[in-house]
Length: 210
Image 1 (spheres, rainbow, N blue to C red):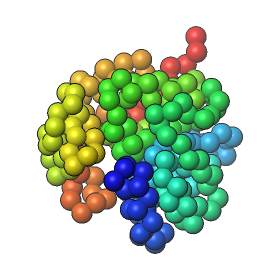
Image 2 (image 1 turned 180 degrees about the horizontal axis):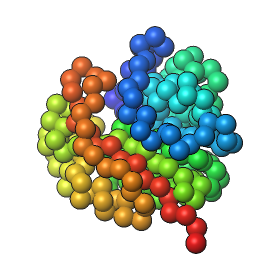
Image 3 (image 1 turned 30 degrees about the horizontal axis):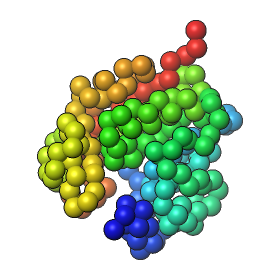
Image 4 (image 1 turned 45 degrees about the vertical axis):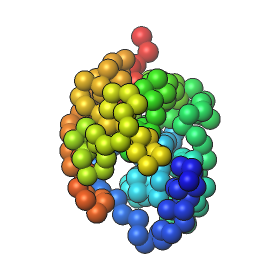
């Protein structure tokens, strides 16, 4: 089963009332005035957890995902949010400097190191100078969700049951975001799923133009 078929099947079975968000974005949004123009991109939005949270806070959000079923669920859940179907392995279909902020919540972990670097660089391209990226990524201590399991492809990147997943430690995050102004990085446990999931939470700003 391809990844797209897998995710379409998963999201087709979810109902809007099942979608819940946690408060992981709460510490980061204070400096972003909802009344100002410009959208927040929710890359790999899935069921729309973060899109729902940000919309309730008054922000304009473009929910982006590869799964058409996910985007239909988001439209049903958050009718005022815009949606965009895209593949993160392709250039983001947004103009340079057009986004106020980008959310990447557990959506940067499916790729080779070189592809991950290209995706992060493209996120920088679409952000305004000083624009914020808020992301959560799998930790190398996320043992309940596959850390260290399967065939090793690259350091901390595994294939298990036909699916590929990356796990991050602090040195790899620092390397990935070395051109950014990192304002927060911390390993945390999230409880959105059946089992506790260990992730890294990172907030970083695109450097201002000089």
